[in-house]
Each structure stands twice: as C-alpha cells, then as structure tokens.
Image (tube, rainbow, N blue to C red; front, side, top):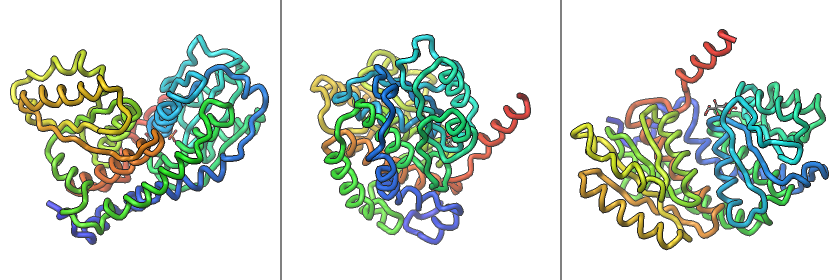
Length: 354
Ligand code: PA5
C-alpha cells in the first residue's frame, strides 16, 4: 500500500494534478468572486420570485451549497434540478440558472432550452460549449470562466459564480464578511491537509486510512448536508469507490432501521458524521444518539469537526477537507483521481444513441 507521506508516490499516481486543484480552492473562490461581485442583472431577473439551478454532477453541487448558504438569510426559494424536464411550476418569474462546466451536458441544456421557450429570466455559468453559444444567441447574461480542470475540480468557480448571481437578485445577502472568514480559514488550514503535511498531523490522511477497505457513509446536517453529498461524489469520482451520504434528521426515520442485513455488512462501512456550528439543538442531540446506535450495531463511526462560523465558511472548509480525503483514498487504492473513464464512456454511448 502507498504510504501517504511518500510524496513522490502521490505525485506519480496523481498524474493530472488533482491535488493541485484541491489546494487551489481558495484561489478559485477569489477568482470567481472577482468575476461576479459587481454583477448586475436586468430587472426581469431581479423581479424573480424563485430560482431553479439546472446542473448535473460537479456542476450541480455548487447549487446545493449555494442554497444551503442562502437558506437562513435568503428571500427566495432555490431548487437544484438534476434532470431533463423543466418542472411545471417554473414560469416567467422563475430565474433559471444553467450551470455546466463544459456547457455540453444534455440534461442541463434541455432544461435551459425549455426555460428559454417558457420566457424565464436566464443566466448561464460555464466555460463554453453550447450553453455559452446559446447565451450569446439569446442575449442571456453569462458568467464565463477559463479555469482548466475536471468539472468537479472547478467547484470554487462554479459555487462562487452561483452565489454572485444569487446576490445580484437579492436571494442572498452581502457575503463579503463571510467570504473573508472562509478564505482566511481555508488558507490557514491548507498546509495541515496538504500532501507534505505528515500523516501524524494530517486529519485528511488519517481519515483516508480509516476509510480504506470500507464503504464511506457520510452524514451531514444543516449546511453540511450538501457537503456530505459532495464527499460522496468525490469518493466515487476521485477515489473510484462506492460511497453513500445520509442527511440528519431524515436518516433517523429510515436508515437507522436498516443496520441488520445482510449479516456482516455493518462492519464493512465507516460512517462519518460531519459536525459544524449552529445546529438546531435537537439535531445535535440526534447526532449523539444516532452515533451511539450505529456504534452499538458494530458500525465504525467517526466525528469529523469541520470548523468555521458562517455557513459559507463551514461548507467551504467541509469541501476542502473531503476533497483532500478523497485524493488520499485514491492514492491508497493506487488510483489516479482525475480520469472518470466510466462516465466518459457512458456519455459517449448516450451521444451515439441520440
Ligand atoms: O465531475 C464530473 O466530471 C461530472 O460530475 C460532471 O460535472 C457532470 O457530468 C456534468 O458535466 P458538466 O459539469 O460539464 O456539466
């Protein structure tokens, strides 16, 4: 097994530099914010009374994170939509944001086109593709960035671009203070999590070792619910492994009943409870009780303190930690975190079968 303090081995496995993109999260956030901090949108957009963010995979999760940040302070309902059809409730007062790194994702394009036909105010977030072309043709506001990576590795750009758009329509308040907190914590924490930080003092490496050979089940609550989802998909795409996520309090109403079969399964998992500030006091109690019940059934469990005060800081710190863990777990499995051959293959089959 690769030793996680063997930097040369890590670099040899990480041929396309995923760890470098993880390290660049705060840099990406700064770049994206510079693009959108002064964004102004037309009156039709500002009059919207709800928001639908259309995206898939690495281009959708930023929408979930943005909705979580907006949940307390925002004035508009925000729905993240991951499918082809435009929901019937979407009308001319629904702001529809198409979010696609490549600008070529068929589900996102289908929703964006239908929203255009329905007369919705639109904004596109992308690096190019048909999404950018259509935005130009239809004279739709476009947030375009040139960061070159896999879509999921550009989360700083995708997430902060969405937040900037939401701020421009009043769906989130002034985020400057929270963003400064988040960036300073991200940059302060980075060295402890980086590849040259030794295992004994690197929480990301320690978590990867705890997960090796097990199926991670990541549990989030409040603003950390979408972070749990991000961890799950990073374990899939970067580490090339099975992973699940659960959300409290919902999991106490179903998942908790499913710990018994198949026999021996409980010991194959490792449940990670992401823990942040400002939880509803009943959810804090649930976290304790749920962990006790799982541990009592022989399920290995760990608390993962995320840090940060504001929701924005919490979600970004949670993403940073999970992204590092997924890359270290990839190294333990001797997998290159960047390529996603099965997803590419499926997309090719879908295009050929069109
Ligand atoms: O991480 C990935 O590469 C995928 O989850 C993509 O984000 C997803 O397939 C959608 O593609 P795009 O982000 O280009 O819209």
